[in-house]
Image (cartoon, rainbow over all chains, first blue to last red; front, side):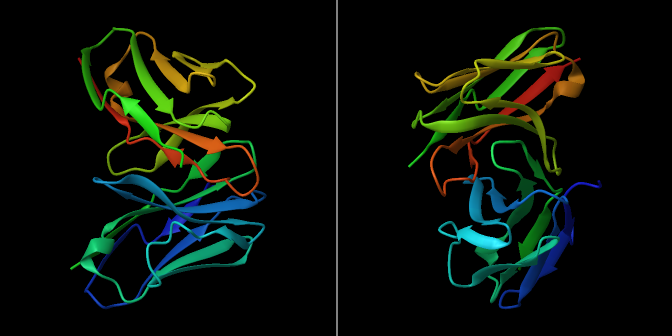
Length: 112
Length: 114
């Protein structure tokens, strides 16, 4: 298995534009997590899914953020409209309850 | 709300030294604790996972211990090497339904001097 795959690796966009981040989790791992990492706040959990169902989205900062998991092999995190303060590295992770979480390489988002 | 603290925030030591990284958490009702390594510009690599019923886990030169009652974990690195230079992150999962996401500390930035 290639592990958790995220795309794109880097994204530069202008303020107000829509941004879509993508994640392909590890097959057979029924949990999927989206995290955001900044220098100031470290790693923060945004939302997680279990068996494709959103369980806890309390970490999503605003209504501008939304996430979907239409099937077990794909998830998206969308920001619309994007703002400069959304600039961060966004990680997707996959896991099973009680076992290790495996992270993707992240998407570095810059909103100018 | 669970809070995870890592001390020190940064550490620089000569090659060959044994060292200890500390992690503390405020809610002792954890399900498990995981140590990660993050290289600059990269994702997180899982190093060790300790279940709440365990006291320690070992992998090569790494040993992680867990004391739930005091809310502490340590990561011991033996015979440090320049390749160990990275940021080390500690994360916990709470017990109980619904709280399945990892809560992270801010990490210890480790530099091993050749």
